[in-house]
Amino acid sequence: MNIHLYVPCFVDQLYPKAAMAMVEILEKLGHTVEFEEKIACCGQPAFNSGYWEEARTVAARTVEGLESAEVVVIGSGSCGAMLHKFYPELFKETPLAEKANALANKTYEFTDFLVRKLGVTDLGAKFPHKITYHDGCHGLRELGIKSQPRQLLEKVQGLTLVEMKEAESCCGFGGTFSAKFPLVSSAMGDGKCASALETEAEYIVSADSSCLMQIQGLLTRQQKPIQTIHIAEVLVSR
Image: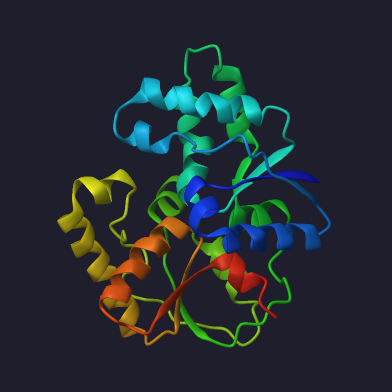
């Protein structure tokens, strides 16, 4: 299969190892991976802030740039939800409506693609650590991503998954939300961190680097030893 890997702008700039891990996994499974450098932001910050016209200007580049892609895979529930669920709404009754719908139908979040589309759960990974898992809001609530990452993690040799009580609670990032409401954002994040620390895990794993950025920032300020890591990086560990 020819796969276009959509790398969110913050992953490209701040967490490239997560993207490279996804490429390694997909190529190991025998697929060809492409990456279109001209496509940057999916337009979600403007969309969530109510600036839909501005969001269309940014998102149109994505819709047109991925028109010929066989399948699109995104290592982010947040951006994945934007393309899969919100693009059809954003471009409704516009000249790009048909292309936006076509893109939505061939777009998958990374763990969902592996488990549900490819039927793959065991990647031969080894990660001898105790971890807990954070469910990102968009992946969980908009895309229904819950069991898929856990099916992948339970096949990782040496890994022990301990669920935190607040696994499904928001980390408080929410993109522009954390900038507009920093005190509320930090309070929500502190609750998430406290719940993760109760598990005594060594790592917090998630499929969303944006959530991990929020959580790791708070943990670092608190001088806590627990670390964060994207699930793709766990799945390439040997």
